[in-house]
Length: 286
Image (cartoon, rainbow, N blue to C red; front, side, top):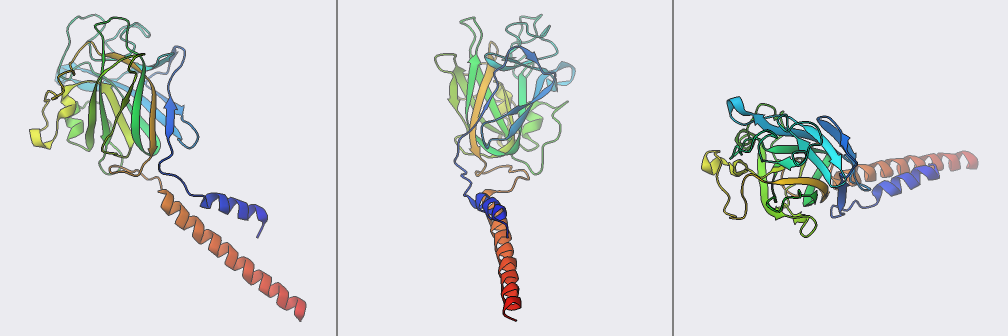
């Protein structure tokens, strides 16, 4: 066996920590990514594909359509098909404030900007940070977070409502109120330690509270500080750990599986090496 093989296998056998903190940063300088873009994470975090959506399909019940994803110094934002030209403030952020040409909100679930974060491994997100929340003191940042915990991967969300998502494998992780940049830019999320490869983050909507116990209808949150409309924010970063909690784990092998596989490979190679050495010694003695 070559020394390089031994070094490789030893490295593979090094324990993989399920508690190592992973991070993804989304700050940029005015890039228009279209509907989707892939971002790299910190060491070991892998990449995440971010896709933009908004519930602007009003004719049939506040259903999702594609949006435009952009990145600025404050982070990524979503511009809906009703939010005017790219980069127009404040609608270039995640918001639930209706289109650029209206002063009317369309609650509880209309014109809500959202993004799906599709990671290349199962992760348990632990925090979400914003880098911008508008310049108007009346604006705030109330945020809804969902994770896909169904089997396999999620179906396309296009043409579906929030309540339909929650009846087909998506789960509310939590609603988080009144984040503020720079005084309170980070929320600790996912207290239940749910793991998934697919996460959805949006401006707050009470439709995120739909579940089987309330017949999948939009229900106001018990947190009185959560309100619909006038939420504007850009996401600057996420943190998490390697998936190990409950929920959808995708097809990424767990660290223990990798260790078992690599340990078996090491044993097989060492056994072959021992046999070859024994045969060589016998030949020399003959």
